[in-house]
Length: 137
Ligand SMILES: CC(C)(COP(=O)(O)OP(=O)(O)OC[C@H]1O[C@@H](n2cnc3c(N)ncnc32)[C@H](O)[C@@H]1OP(=O)(O)O)[C@@H](O)C(=O)NCCC(=O)NCCS
Image 1 (cartoon, rainbow, N blue to C red):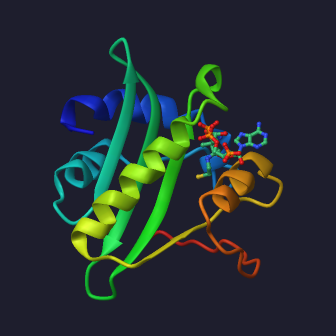
Image 2 (image 1 turned 90 degrees about the vertical axis):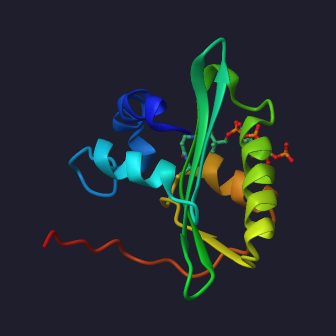
């Protein structure tokens, strides 16, 4: 992903209900995504078909602890079940290996069966359930 993709990514992701952590639809700000896309420690991938974004994977990497977090993974409904998210994940893995990162985690909503199946198929081990708490400072 580069700066030129940010507006399209924001437009897509605000509509993805699986990304909403409270009842208010929210997504990363344009400014945050621009900085993220330029960060050398993090991973931001988009998959395009005829110039249109049909998939994305956003991963944050906390360098001191070598912990990667799969923040967002999405594939356009018209392109699902064709291995797009698997390709994105394999590229994430490749880049994490290159950076020497050996741990990645992800949160998924209770009831999001597609995401859970995908995480299972990527070899993630399912841990305990947690509540999402948040506060703006
Ligand atoms: C989750 C999501 C990214 C999967 O994308 P996808 O490109 O369709 O997934 P893939 O085709 O690469 O399949 C990956 C694995 O997921 C599982 N899977 C995906 N869709 C499935 C379906 N409809 N039924 C059963 N299993 C499914 C399969 O196990 C598959 O692995 P396999 O091919 O080895 O069997 C997509 O459904 C999505 O964008 N959902 C909405 C956003 C979301 O919930 N994101 C995750 C939370 S951040």
